[in-house]
Image 1 (cartoon, rainbow, N blue to C red):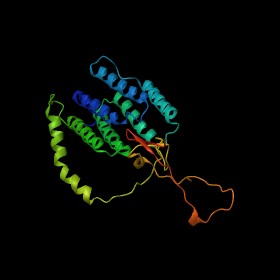
Image 2 (cartoon, rainbow, N blue to C red; image 1 turned 90 degrees about the vertical axis):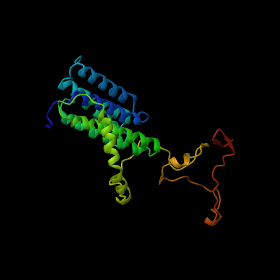
Image 3 (cartoon, one colour; image 1 turned 120 degrees about the vertical axis):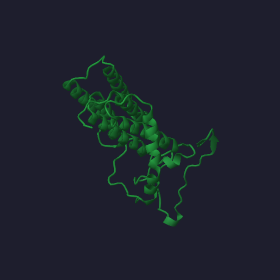
Image 4 (tube, rainbow, N blue to C red; image 1 turned 60 degrees about the vertical axis):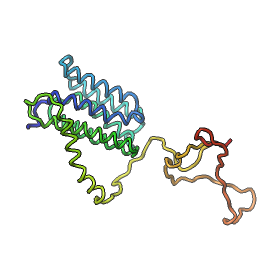
Length: 253
């Protein structure tokens, strides 16, 4: 196999499906224009697949890249942060799909897909999210299989089954790594701009919401005394008391 060979048409369909699948979990945290870019790129690439459209020229692609970067900065106000970086990956993946004509482009899209799939765990580690990520991994492995098939291979439905078999065979190694691989702390940290709550209480509370609070080293509150300051042992600070509970929502009154 030569990486400079033309991207197989059957692989292109799988790549489009994969790129859309890995984007779905981020729908709630990215601007709507990123979704529009994704769908427009997929539609345009399908038209190219059907030979009803041509690949955008070099200057058009450059203009699209500049426009994407400008919109990112306009939406987030910075390029530093978890959400802007994930959004940047999504935009880069969508634009790369437009110019994917060689097998090496297909491999790059698959690797981008794996990386985007992993970024979903930055924001949530629930069981449904894990199962969906396994599903996306299966799609990406299927696309990888089609990229490694011989040029003369026809359209077949065996690729998903082969991907499932490969992932099943990898389960023992996954279990070994899960228990034996050392738990390494993050090498670096990136600030989040999602507006997650910090330590403190509002005038209402839902059960389980406290677990979503982020830790903060900021001053919680300040107190001023009109007279003599009491001894520290005599200081008592009472928190909020939620006296009413209605439809799993606790309120002050």
